[in-house]
Amino acid sequence: MKRINREFCLTDDSVNCYGYRLLTDGLELDRYRPPVGFLMHDRDRGVAVQWTDFRREGDALFATPIVNDTLFPDLAKQIEEGFINAASVGHIVALEISDDPTDKLPGQDGPTVRRWFPREVSLVDIPGNYNALGRLYDENDNVLHDLAAHLNNNNHMNLKEIFPDLLSDDEAEVKVYLTALRDKAQRADALQQELDDLRAERDKADIKNLLDGAVSEHRISQQLADCLATDYVGKLEALRNLIGKMPAKKTVPQPEPKKADDTLASLSWDELDKKGLLPRLKAENPDLFTAKFNERFKH
Image (tube, rainbow, N blue to C red):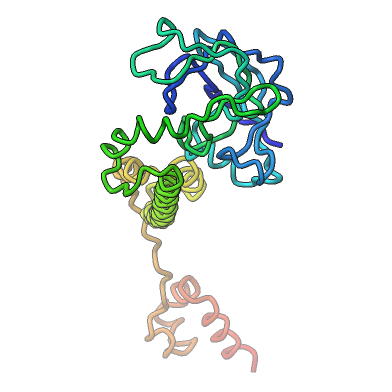
């Protein structure tokens, strides 16, 4: 299990996509036991999340998810990267329902649920997710209200305005359309991730080349280059600007070893002695000096 350090809004008093609303003050949270949820309200896939640290703020209820990373190994990463970023109450048990006009807000065509509790709260990609069928149940799980038809009859024009290429107002068609739209977005996100990875690899290679060049120009030491490679990951231009401000150091040319004059090698020991060249030969070419000494005196 993995706890995600992020709060989700589970519900508030606003009108949901089905045209009704749930009053947070009427939520009997102690009856939501165990506080579990699924992914996209799909119970067949198993429990995806357990909610903890419930907190009310105004008319909103917040909680923190503990993800079942055994069944859903990638779910925590999807949450942390923002692909799954909402919660949706599901299988709502309505204990008190009102059709009183004074309870309704602008745009509310369905009832107001004054007392209620959920049997699960799912992680979803779209709040008010269409996979959470617009049904209200009694405590024995009998359907009290089926608001899916209400969704089609009242929200179809809004959906058509948002999705002009939506062909049908059938609930199943809407679900297929939105699922395909979600899958397309996920594929686009995957391609974007691949592109970002390629850019990161290219930047990493460019940073290495930049630092290698700075070391060869004696702008920085290899030890400093290793530190900068870590500190400037993903910051190629900033590193380029920094290196550009560092002057290249001129190296002190090393003197080439002196070579004995070829004329010295051609002279005998006695000739070198007569010309006073023996000290010079010894300084410039000790090995040759020793060889000529042995040649002269060790017969």
